[in-house]
Length: 315
Image (tube, rainbow, N blue to C red):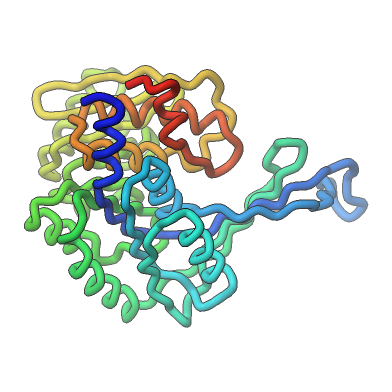
């Protein structure tokens, strides 16, 4: 298909993102002196900026391609949760955020001075079982209307029912993509594709000494989990796609790695968008790799829009 056909297909695609949403807060300022109280810089903050993080950043990367996207998650009944809703509405993402009155919305605060991150401060807690059960019920109502389902697992407790959710999606013949977390990958059994990074994969299958050993370990995992494929993101080494019978390497397209924050969100978001538009898996991974190369050249949690991904109509 040509670039105009792709754009039209993207605009008609529908993707449901489920997972751990968070608010990224940036404090920008200058650090011109050291504190007399401790050997740390004093940052004079002159600007605050909010961005969607976690599953929200995945949804935003998808929305930037013109895709219709819904986000199912949990937030607290607080100012940060309300700011999340503002950010979602501003970016044309259909919000299905259930409010947990006992939860504090997850927020990551990054302090930036002279274009360098000095510290990150996290506030987070785990959703209650009652709200998570309601999330599962809402999911069942939403899954049939989606062309693809993306699970963004940040290990914050929002995907307690992911195994059942994947079964529901598989029974509905949906494409299921998972950005995994932790050492228990069994809960992702039956997904179409998972997208671990090198450290996440090593924690599950153990270390490897060669590409041949890596391929063997990945294929064993892929078969055990009944996956169509596994996309390994390898930082400056690019990406590797493992499917039954063969693997394919994609060298990085990054000109300069400035900040890898949220790069995994971009990868799975673009991958899902392209698969939902009718691209095959190799085309989709190639475009996700291109997007990752762009986003790591930006400061903080960032996205790639359609025009950046296809400069001058290249496809």
